[in-house]
Amino acid sequence: MNHSIEVRDLYKTFRFGKGHKTFYDMLDKYLIKPVKKTESKHSDIFYALKGINIAVRKGEKIALVGDNGSGKSTLLKTIAGLYRPNQGKVIVNGKMVLLAGFGVGMMNDLTIEENLYLYGAVYGMDRETIRSKIDDILDWAELREFFKAQYKTLSSGMRTRIAFSATRHIEADIYLLDEALTAGDKSFRHKCDAYFESNKHTDKTFIIATHSLDFVKKFCDKALWLSRGNQVAFGDIHQVLDDYEKQGSLLCAE
Image (tube, rainbow, N blue to C red):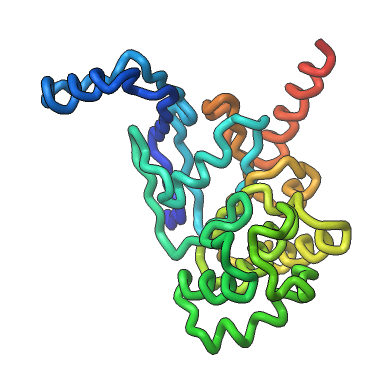
């Protein structure tokens, strides 16, 4: 079977706390006992992902749902290679682009114009190709008047809009989108809907982390439901989201 993404028994942990309480703890670990492998007792381990197993076929559209802190962003960043798994593996077949937060690859001290050249170059576009697309990127994001503004001066919504608009021009096989649908007014969201509709029946693979359930019911084939780092369900979009919404209703009723 032609898979774009395979995630096998994936665990991802993060370490909280200082790890070494004092200067003498560091000396003990690195100089006095250099072969010791155990972590300092002052460090706490948090499991962000626990045993995730999914296989995504080429062209599938996957909704990634769950409450805040469920592990959605961590999973996308691990698939993209920004985080290294602590256990298990991720197999990716194809060119991939990640839109997470306010735009991976965007630099705060650069202008929008400079960032667009940088962003395109990261994904293999030459300068002339980028220049030919800038007008459309700015108009689609409705940010033409901020062309020379530093990226750090933009609001979070504006940053996401310009990054999402630029991502439309990246030719890739796999698109990982993290909450990109929450930015912008109704006009911008209509543009997003039209973009996704135009890609619904293509062989491009999408994994979209979002709370916009009405949207993903229309666009996605399957859903992956995460809760506190655990995989609750993975399968048909309507079945998974029905169960997810029922659980939400039960919690509200308690």
